[in-house]
Image (cartoon, rainbow, N blue to C red; front, side, top):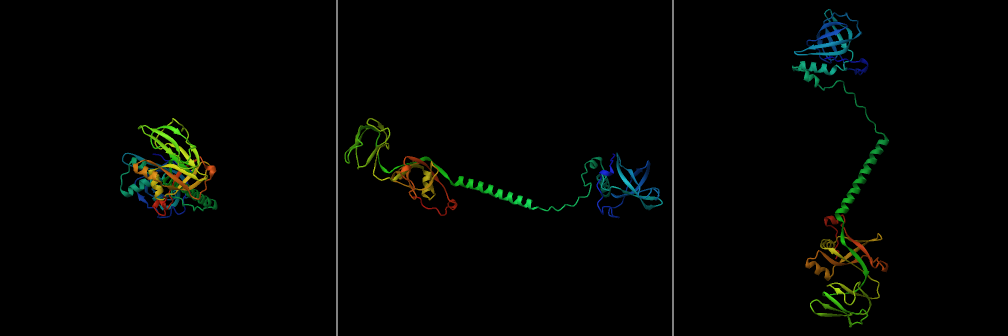
Length: 354
């Protein structure tokens, strides 16, 4: 196995890496070939080598490319490294230094030395799989944060908080807000006269005086029912109502208005929505022109009767708080919204909406 290195590519040896006696010298079989000659090795460490060569044979300070060979049972490990001659040694021994102790040969040499010290069997697989350090870690340079970095961190934190706030608001609104299915009709306040049975409208007189017959219905049961005009006022016939038309129970026949401009808001509300309104959840109507007005849900006798019958939707009247609707809003529609306050989520601070 050959491992060649270019001295110009190896890192500078850290100060203090090769202090005397810092790395242990290990006696083991190996040979060193340099300048075409092969010498028997005596001891070796990661920083220096002892070989059987009289001191002074090599000029102190001279550098040579050497080949280290470690013979094992079935294979030989060969490493290439640059060595530097010293004036240390005796008549039978010379000491050479690794010119670049942290060179490319370090990983395999460290594995061989550590395995011999531990008494492990050196294998080719273990040598190829060695992933130990090949050079000392460089000290971490302290990173000084600039003002720009601090501003960037603060900006990221503020944006994150804003996104979290928007997401939380959307989730809270979705959890606490519900819209009713049916529209809210805004009409002029008046007395509505409705059909009480199914049948045919045989007589209709919207100009009848109070006490006179206003309309007559021939019921499907064979009965003929006549209804008197209850009071004076402006009479408005329902659309598609005329003599001979067929009506069903609760169909609107006519409405009697007085001279006031008061407004009535009517809608069908779900049983769940009615329960929330009675428990005090704030109710609001949203107009087509973008206005949002708080309202109170008014429970009538017809509301109670429909709820007791088990109807899923019951009729209710709404009263605008503050009376901010006028004659110009008549014949418009709106949407009923039920919501909870933050305290209302926990059942605190809710007012009865009845």
